[in-house]
Length: 140
Image (cartoon, rainbow, N blue to C red):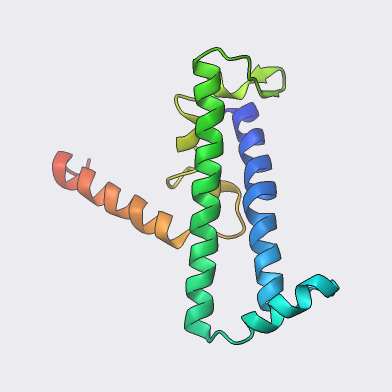
């Protein structure tokens, strides 16, 4: 385990993913009391359970892609020596990974490790990839 990299991953997942999913779920549940959110929350009440599930999947997908692109930008700027460094425990996280943008994916990725909202589609992709590898190389 790479502690600085995992610390960074937990910060990313907690603050850029889970906090936003909590906010969205609060909107769906009519939880927020802010005056400027009441109209939006009323509109969201019109969606049935299946539509809400689709909206939730959409939000998670958008957040995952946004995080991916953000991490890719950090990695790219570091690789091109453009002066962007994110230090955790005095270590540049971009140099600790062979691709920060890939750290969020897979069974051992940050979403699966740190999120309270595990990604069903990510689980399906990981399981599919594992089955293909097993078919190609044999289950050892």
